[in-house]
Amino acid sequence: MRISSRGRGEEGRERITLVPENVDDLWHLSYVLEPGDLVSGDTTRRIQRDDEQMRDTGGEREHLNVTIEVDDVEFARFANRLRVGGVIVSCSREDQLGHHHTLNVEERAEITIEKHFKADQIDRIETAEEAAENPDVAIATVEEGAAYIHTVAQYGTEEYASLTKPTGKGEYARPRSELFDELGSALSHLDVDAIILAGPGFTKNDAMDYFENNFPAVAETIVTTVDTAGVGDRGVHEVLKRGAVDDVQKQTRIAEEANLIDELMENISTGAKAAYGVEQVAEAADFGAVEHLLLLDSRLRAERQGDGDWDVDVNDIIDSVEQKGGEVTVFSAEFQPGEQLKNLGGIAAVLRYRLQ
Image (tube, rainbow, N blue to C red; front, side, top):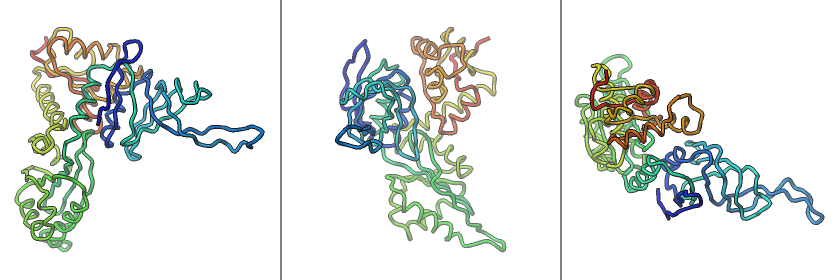
């Protein structure tokens, strides 16, 4: 994310002009924008023409600069765009005022947001700005007969490839080199700055030897190897927990989420310093007992937009925690720790002390 300028708008609102530089930035913005916000940007709009000189052709597209009052936001990850819909409140053509329009925000498209930003939303934008210099990372996990490649993004990890080649003994067994060759070929097509190679036993080391001889460019991109008990999603979780990604991509928050959810689950299992569910967490916040508040981004957005069912204002909980020295982490619903938090109601807390 690149922040071009910051200033003040009307009625005490803050104005930020920024440029999303990748799909991660678009995802961040989907959790910053809310109904009632003002968003400005360049767009095209179909204009109806029907006069004596021109037959109505159903409308021609014109380039416009519009400001809309947001009523809905949709992150279309696979289309690499953010759809922001609302009513036009300012426009380079006055005859378009009051009409509904959808801004398709894409990478490298400058937009201006004017709103009363909440502290976690500013933090999200600034974190995305800091993360602009992070390298792109892939995690390859390999064991006998199977290998997986996951790419690391700020909104979570995505499986890029899943490879199976039975090795060892048996009628359908094949040489290990076939698995290593497919894995090396798949990694060579990835445009990343660093690869972490992980897995149980010595298979990953043998794979590394194979890459050095057959895929030297891939071998040069591998920055470290990590011992894990499993491969696939389980292996990736272990890599994140051990901080291997943090060593390469220091601004990523995925590893922090994995560690936090593990600490929370351990506290829950021992009946120790933990609370989950909005009522328990709100009570803990009132007592000043919350050391670290865990919130799911999708649930937070739903509550703020009035689509949730909590009886407590989530902003009051956040303010209470921060005023009493607690920390707040907003989890991505796209990643496994976020799924675990979702099963706990989308809100939980690691406590300073046990509540009776």
